[in-house]
Amino acid sequence: MGLIMITGASDGLGRALAGTLAAQGHRLVVHGRDETRLAEVAAATGARAIRADLSSLADVRQLAARVHAEYDRLDVLVNNAGVGFGPAGEPRQLSADGHELRLAVNYLAPYLLSRLLLPLLRRAAPARIVNVASIGQADVDLDDLMLDRGYDRFVAYRRAKLALIADTFGLAEDLAGSGVTVNALHPATLMPTTMVRDAGMDRVEPLETGLRATLRLVVDPDLAGTTGRYFDRDQEARAREQAYDPGFRARLRSVTQRLVGA
Image 1 (cartoon, rainbow, N blue to C red):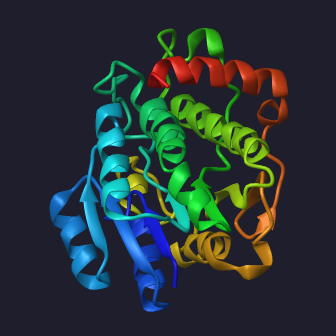
Image 2 (tube, rainbow, N blue to C red; image 1 turned 90 degrees about the horizontal axis):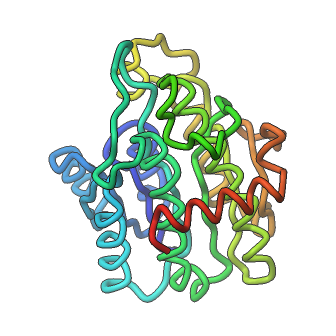
């Protein structure tokens, strides 16, 4: 079986995905921020655990470097780690690099990690990148990317997820013919996770719904050549129109490369 890396694997969807993939016989690299919970996942799955704080671009680079040091190929990267809406009244927060926190973790980190691990994915081709996004999306204002004006925690989250979907489409175009596919999905709505509980929201769908949809993009052989798509659970869907605008994607990429120091 192949080597699969899951970010945000110490809780919620990532943890459930790690358990299922381990039971299927896959080798795993699991990432998390909470050392205790991450160790529990590693013990239960036999995975290689690597702790990193994805709100720090230096940590993202160190995470990628450690994977490169230990492995010569990677079959699947699941960019699952994220920061949710947060509790009501929570003020605007900045990452270690001075970027708006939800943009940093939900978009900049997977953007950079995917590109740093591309050599390993190319070597393993056919390989896959799966970006866990959301049906909650909002158009990105590139003139106020950090939401310095009129911060709203819901808008911050939704803009970051839209940026991730837009980059999914652009990266898929870049990788056409390489054997590396890139897709994004909304796994389920308000699953019973720490992220949802912290936001003070009631759950809507069971964790199993999101697990099933994400697992499909990771292992389903029928999706081997599918790339540059957005899925709502297990159905191909349409994201917000801004994500399909090549002009917007080009401008977003230019800004992003500057922010991550690419």
